[in-house]
Image: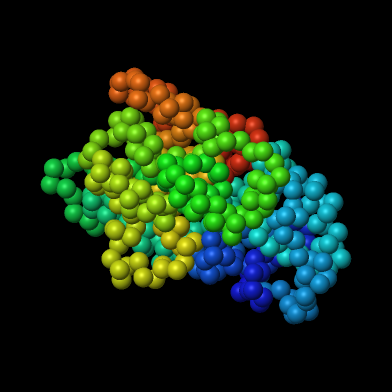
Length: 419
């Protein structure tokens, strides 16, 4: 495995040698996440990553001199995520990628996403993914320090360490013990909420959110720029109506629905809520229902001073890392979309290090949609009961379902014990 700064715009990863063998060499270009210019070393501790995985895979920072000047696209070594079948089996890589590797000695994966199958995988591959995800990846001190600061402020400077703190912020967890205890001696708890309601998610869903013709025109204009294939598909194929998509639980939860879910689960007005993410579609006016009922709702932007957040501005991946830390350390984490990769990673991290004590709220959007349709005809007590049945709050660790991601469900024999 190899690390280096990008030599050409858009380069992200290069693999050279058998990607399934012990002696795989990877040249990793961590170029962009959500248009962020952060490199791998701007987010994770490179030395720790290299040293921890040394027994499994050799990692170097630069390609050999004779490979650095190659035009990888011209020689056929450029592989995009469109070339990789989603959830491809290892046999796919052996059949289609390994010959390129043998021929050119290097493969460049561009825009490579979640393309490795969840199950079944060879024991050693699943084990390596687990070691990498839960042990080799440690945030850089700059992110850890600010993450510790955010956690301390969410806990209102109560000198209490959570079970995940040292895994998230390393040595900076010690500084969290220097705060002042509340005079009442109460433990300050908080709920972290990932509201997946950004415009790209909203537009891609093809759902409607009460904004009428103006909203439809705005989202269609966004699709034409960012999702042209979806626009063409709408012209050639009859797609389900927004109402049908809603009934099937395929629409993101609106803030107005999220606040009903949170309230029905028993979180009172005094609850401190950390809202992860940014750029909620509709802005502050769309969040009014949440902020009105929960005045103690905060974000990283409101918790940090302008000087404290300045080093992270314009680096969306680093800002996401801060959200990851605060959400993972929360007493309760609530997601509005169980399919979100961000929420799945947090959920798995809380399972792996939480000892079965980290509560995570996952909504069943299909059942919730049915409840919301009827919420004008039922009393609040009945509404509460139905919402609680539609939400699984994991206060214990469940066995890992077959065929699921090891990052979200780490309880498998390759990753951790089953008891």
